[in-house]
Length: 436
Image 1 (cartoon, rainbow, N blue to C red):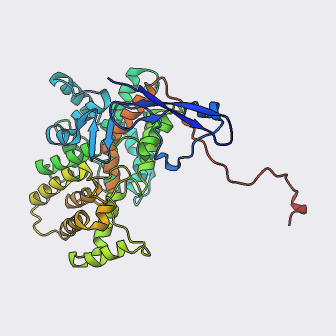
Image 2 (image 1 turned 135 degrees about the vertical axis):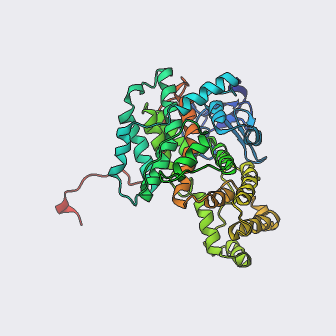
């Protein structure tokens, strides 16, 4: 595997002084060179200021590569389009976690290891009773995953490779069970235990939808759609939740605590709740005939109306995941016999406008993965409160892979961003009687 290479240097001179520093330029396998500023403070006595870390590489990683300008997403070097078409989620889990696609025997073993970890400790089942029935499923998921460290404390030595692997399998396998139970708990329905004869995606759908009173058969089309959703959301480089997992991991926290931290970060509407926001937007538009008026509001600089599901912090081109998701959306609606879906009709018209209207083209507001994923999930009968939960199920493998990479990287240090202090200057304490 390639690693960072030296690609020259840049010289930084501090105005008004005779100080200068030579910053090494480093290159990875693909992507933009980065200036190594680790000695900037020692050489010049200054730090950098980068709110949101949009111009800062916080780590070296071999997991995911994104070229936002070209609309490229690679998992371990493999294009997302090829993986979505030819692979399945469990194989992608192996790829992200271990670095390579397995041979037949390796895949069979990995699949078995995941399958036979899907059961959760029966005491953990009773943990759900402590939540209110109307609790948001993300609150339940965050709490229960964090509590896993209290139930599976036998393998929490993060310096032991085997224990890291066991914790990884437990998280990949058990998070879908916990997520499905959070949903069942909110409905007041019995928990459905996992089944070893079903695929990862089919088992998740079965636990979500089955009831003890009658047989539930998973539709192959819906199984494939769910598998695609999981693959497309499995990892996405150093986004907010992944960076949170890495930051928590840098302290030496156990993996269950780190993944719970990632779930908490994902819960934010600006991150994991975007597909729910798309459905809300389409519901507010109401009908395709109202789109021109809505678009006018979006363009009005005095309006607070936003076009949800378009544009991306990284992608300045068509999100490659959105193209795949649109095809899956068509298949799901056809399978379900939906011939007239107002939400989809509005989505198609909005997409047409965004791809042809100069206002959106200039701003590079292309559809992203959230634009169609919400429509698929709604068509599958999944309530909006579960959208971010499903995102978390998919992203768990990315989080655990990033966490493992962090722990196994000897150059990583505890995360400790700097700040620019703009508060009060030093001042002396005045007793309360003397104030006023």
